[in-house]
Image (cartoon, helix red, strand yellow):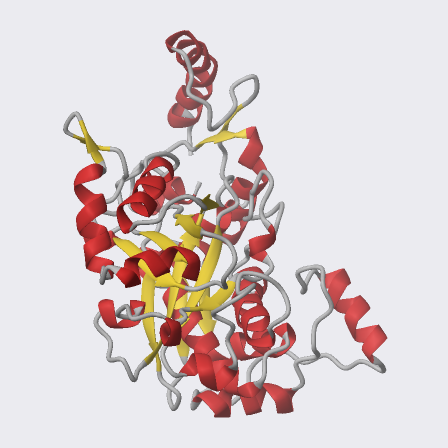
Length: 326
Length: 77
């Protein structure tokens, strides 16, 4: 049973100007969330309107499936994206996802939405060339749907509870998939306990996004040594969330080729890097455990590049996508 | 702000110290927590909220905010 208040407009122009006036968009136009479309999105995910996806206790906010569906429609999603959107919202609102902090912080952290499993192929999620950027409906709108929930439901509004000094374009949308088909590695969601045939979303906070570009490295060790130079600076030092914090490495094919050639697994990379994090008995990378380093295969050929997603004060949360139950 | 409000709910008298850079956020939080007029002490520039302060700057800032903290803690209800 839908519970959201309803407004009637004589035209799209009238609607969009009213939405802008009320602050209901991220600055870009939105798709009108008609009751019919919202119902179709809920049905596509097998969700009841009132089902609670999560809460922000510090903001007196409860996020329902209907809230998520309204914002998914507005973001430009197709109905079949809704299970992924619902899972992303659940992951973002996980207690250790620390959503109050990652969306309110002066640092302007963003949320990376990383998709794994069959859902990537079903929805056309880009995992290869240009996967961080514009041009792909699923990437653009699933990530945007989460951000519209942050804004329209969770009160993450610039100048109000979003106090970012600069903020980031990643806050419009930041969503991509792992390129499982072009990597021999164990996918992220399987490393985190799910089955290969499961679909999953991992939401990771991103305080900054750092490219490690190295065209000269020709061995796994050389690539790792380049990564070390960047990993050992720039990670938030707060440890109050415990030892299970994360840093995400997104490695492109022209770095992965050297690991593939010598049969290195993701664990082999961690095994090489972890002891080298330490200098004079101090861990220079503020990770509690080797497995806190999450490694994702993505991106296209051309650049010898790996990107580091340095976190804000949150764990990366992996949530299974249930096609029948959002 | 929310920490202070929740401490008050738990019966612990509290005073939030809010930097001017996040004053709007603190006021929004007080409002949505149902206590729009909950008082706080304001810290202001030249102390940048995320900077690493010198010992002297910390001392000066403390001298500036402590009277307000004491005033709010000892006022009648």
